[in-house]
Length: 232
Image 1 (cartoon, rainbow, N blue to C red):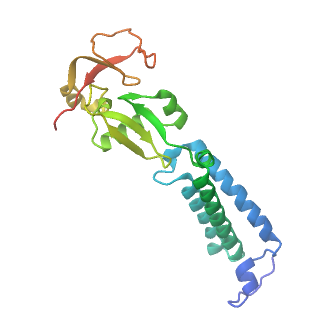
Image 2: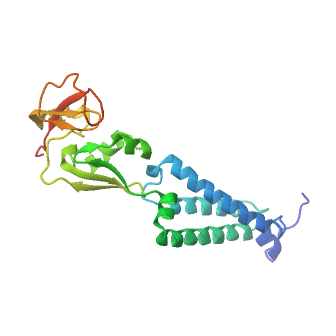
Image 3: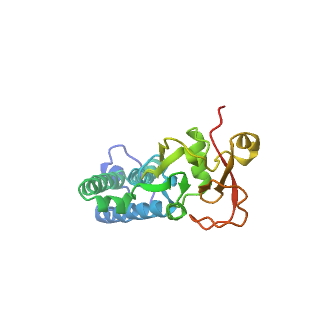
């Protein structure tokens, strides 16, 4: 590449860099393909990757960050292609959001729907697996909100953003403790005599010594004692 002196009034180089104007349609196509690939990748990685953002929001943020970063650091790249990328990403975002607001099935196809992970104090392993959500992540979220066991929960929803929503059980029933095993003292304080809980799904039975008994909820044969809330 020849050594061309830089000039602050070289507007063609400022906007296009070394590319020709014919490159702009390819930029538009690349943006659309990249945006779709990001949406698919986020769906496959699971909602918890996105944190508190929707798949749309994190995809457009990644697209804009990738587009803007290069021309800010490289003199050979102009500003017009990233401006086109930003415009295309915004148009795609608004178009998909408008389509999702009127067609719910289209919206859930792209950004997923609310998922019921637990009901009546029992985990749904099929939904946990489908959502790519480890059981310990659910227990961690419950502890952060102040819950001590699954029996305190009537419904546990996973929102499209990956956050959790809890509906408390009224009244609470004995359930599987979500406290960490390193705090066995506090776990044992809440032990409910005469009740057992399935370690796999949290199903509770008013009976002790269930060694070898098959859980009618998930099929597991591993049991522990059920607990009630402990005043701390």
